[in-house]
Image 1 (cartoon, rainbow, N blue to C red):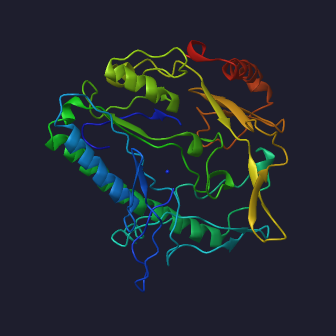
Image 2: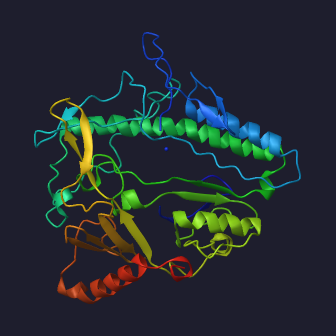
Image 3: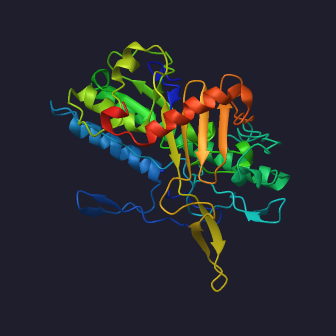
Length: 374
């Protein structure tokens, strides 16, 4: 954790980056044109993370000259996958069930390529779950991850770390700009991500949008006036909490239509624990089908998914995760003894009362709005 920051462990839930020349000197950059207040601004040939970092510094320097407060939201793509294709990217590999899979990677500049090869021996999600007989069908039908897939996933993990090393440098530049302009001591900084990511957990090679912890949890690190350095807050912070928390910091009132909660007081003073259940929703699920007449891949609704509806809805509390799927399958995990969510205890007698209580809570959360959700 950087000095002076607060790590918010309860945090729950970017595109294409241009890369450096591949071996041989061939440039394959995507169009990094931005819309700046209605004016198209070309940035071809620039690595997007560095370009956005430079722009953040320029904006801070320009805004700091005024006595008016300012708000800056820098939305980086790293470590999201994207082109151009690079020489060390994994190729399509075959799964144990005969199907092929493509492990995707971010574009990275040559300055960081290979930096973590010696440090990263495997993706964080491996070794994966061996027994998935208690999981819903979409997990149960996944084959074990084989050696070729593991090698491709390892390369993806290394490249994700490489792309984040560039992002780390740009965050440092942003903090330095705030310090150099005299704004840092009067600025709240939040560092987060829009989703988690699978790296082999529950046989998920990659991806997100499932209710399990690797996908559900996101980092949140905060620093600013009144926020103590080096402490951890276990209370949940949701993506819907950002707007009311920023409004709190600005001294503005919160519209009644907002579902989230202002959590600035928790960041500064802590709290007694979770204090509220968290609704999880994902879907509608899609699957990839091959169009025989063109050979192209098409995204179509999964057979068990109803159009326009979340495939999975659940409730996460401090001690449990309860999930209901459209297929009728149910999952319940006791996070106190099973943080990896390996043992589904739904339908067992010893958890029957807890399951009924969580099912009622989920029904309430599905239909709440505004203050009811808070």
